[in-house]
Image (cartoon, rainbow, N blue to C red):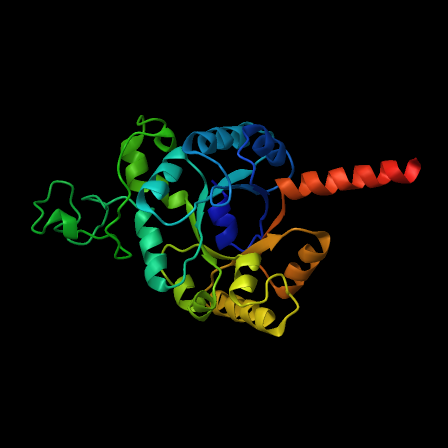
Length: 284
């Protein structure tokens, strides 16, 4: 899984957005030269089963596109089911504070195991007698880990569960969405939370929460973007956003975003259909 590495190394990955809960649509997007395809479950009718099938389709497509799943919220069971499907990255909306960011990361991690260097494991030896309550054991970042353990697609249906439990989840990128003035004010603190690999600005929600929906030239919105980028980049954490037109791609690149989701499946369909109709009407 390279997406987490690309984000960390500043490779400026570009992705597509899949709002339609269709494996065929996901596969079609993955055949483009995107670094990743985002599977949305917040504003779509996607189910756990359709998400899993969309991930299969993305992986089966020619090329190297990986799957990022945007969950509807940071709810434990929802996070667990998405991660068990085996994406390369997970993104949660409405992360408004460092406490919310820590909770998101903790939901994405398994409880640390004796012998993995966890604090409270009597020296980290696999055969050591643990002198503390196992429930108090934390990893090197101070997380107890709240992801439930079960054989799933992510661990080859349990065939490599032990290894995946200890290290497999380390390859998953965890992305926090910034969508409110409170989140903007806390962007640096959110980015500094161990285990947060990137931030993502939701332009529609952020502009709406500022009372300026879609007014991307408004000084209040521009200031919020600049503040978020500066705060996160000071922590060495990349920030991305969604562009739904050529003009927005230009705008967001010039604004200094580190990665983009450059278009949506619904947008591609709508624009292509409108252009075809316009062309036909011009000819007749």
